Image (cartoon, rainbow, N blue to C red; front, side, top):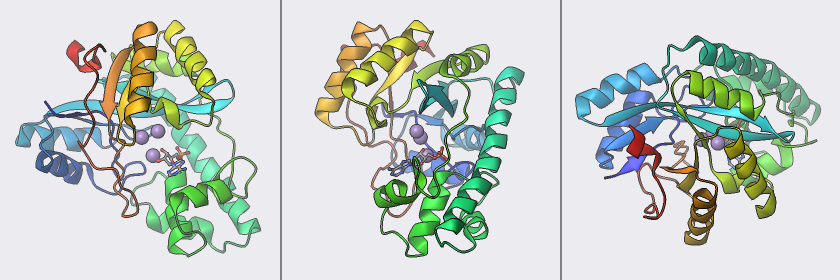
Length: 274
Ligand code: AMP
Ligand code: MN
Ligand code: MN
Ligand code: MN
């Protein structure tokens, strides 16, 4: 079975529409597929309709931004009820913060000499949500930076011109939103935060103690050692294991839908619970 439980459409910072994503997932022979846009469920109904047509098992998901120890982390809500009011109220707060943050980021970039940052970034974003990915792609298109890595480092983090601190809900509150909506809460890409491995393990342990159900053991950019490490910690902490590519689809990105390494047999997979 080919399973990919982490993907983005143009309702957040992906390139493709939900329908295009499902068609691509079908081409890549995915059996189970989750759409997990940042802080929005807007694409889920369109994706579900297409998945039903093509015979893919569709898991409605969301990737929620959250604070842990003053840092931004991402918690996936998998198999959520999109009608749930508490979840939607939480996501709305995050969408409102994103709109304000975009204006602050544009102002910061303006101060660094990037003219018309807001308008140019709006032109990159196909839907209403403006993410840092859109700012990054704009700066690359404008020739200010050459790749995503350097643009985030030079412009979009910390005290850099377009850096604005996250004001997301605390992780335990986010886990609660996901649970009341009937979903499984899964820590996304544990090794992609700017933390030492010791701190990553402490975070996983703290999340587990606060009801988090699982962790992404396999992501589209994991190597064998990384998979082994998180697999082991998931077992120790009794966390379910998930697997997802984190596909966004920008031309300058290498990750593909459904091309994931195998999950170690020793882990309990989150999809066994559906
Ligand atoms: P936001 O949620 O608007 O703060 O944007 C975060 C998104 O930016 C992540 O989900 C990634 O898609 C992207 N991102 C963050 N850091 C990097 C990076 N160093 N290289 C490429 N993409 C990044
Ligand atoms: Mn993203
Ligand atoms: Mn993420
Ligand atoms: Mn993601």
